[in-house]
Amino acid sequence: MSAWRQKLVEMSYPLLRPWLFELEAETAHHWTLAGMRLGARCGLLAGEPPVVNPVEVCGLKFPNRVGLAAGMDKAGDAVDGFGALGFGFVEVGTLTPVAQAGNPAPRLFRVVSRQGIINRMGFNNPGIEAGMANVKGRKYRGMLGVNLGKNFFTPNERATDDYLAGLRGAWREADYVVVNLSSPNTKGLRDLQEAESARALIRALHAEQEILRQRWQKHVPIWIKIAPDLTPPQRESLTRVFMEEKLEGVIATNTTLSREHVEGLKHGSETGGLSGAPLTRRATETIASLAQQLQGSMPIIGVGGIMTAADAVEKIQAGAALVQLYSGLVYSGPALVRECIEALGGS
Image (tube, rainbow, N blue to C red; front, side, top):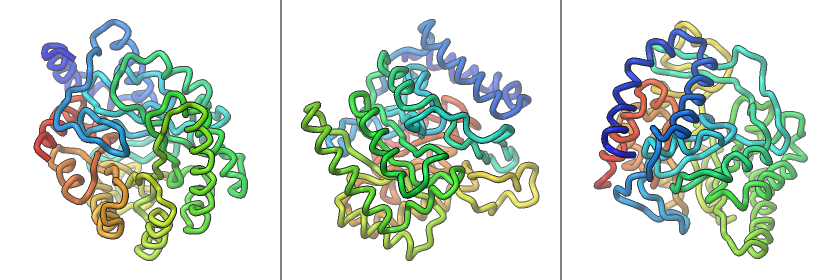
């Protein structure tokens, strides 16, 4: 994006934020997505991601280390708009095999005094086929990730079928895929993080990955996204499985069920996953623990409470190869993307 467009977009957000924060959180989210789509169509949001300290991860060349986390663009229909903000990679979804409406509203809440967000969205999405149709015509040339989930009506004993369907559906468009085992908003999903359940799933995914690789002459890395609420023994067991099964990458972390730092505050007791500043330290500590256990055997993608450029630097220093933003973008706006890219320029 040209310098004057970038400056205009960055200056606009502080003016728009008070109005957006007057709206119910999910309504504001929908208006933001509409603005991103409109900005891309009219050419205001256009341009290639800046190449700043590019890095190769799993054979993929990322122009910079800062990405958009899953959950912001669930349908994959605003990739060009978000990509124009400077993100080196954009992750869409979570997408399930069949479209679903998600949980009843209201289901998205701000805890403004702590820069937190609580959501219980429940994988609302148009389904993998529609999501991939949305991203197919993208102009964005950064890396595209596709976050995969299981439908709420699919029992855990058949969850592998859903993830395999998602993998097949995403293959031709995705640069990498993420298997989401850690959302707290689909009943029983986090049980799939149990070591032997994860092992069986990884083996099935790797078998299908090889079939698809040969069919399409293209390799798509598979990463798994984990929760910040795993106990140390649980995390150690899961990490051991990841290493033994030669998983290609891990994203740490998803939202937390903890209500530390938001107890007694407006919306602080809402059901769902908490993200934003209350998650910052917990996510960074999880990354550091994983890095120690993995010993460089696979990359870690750091996400959770990156509200400032300094938070992004801490995630990299803890052992992450890449970082992703979500809640920080809501509270700080597009300037945060540039600030994080610049701060990581020498990392």
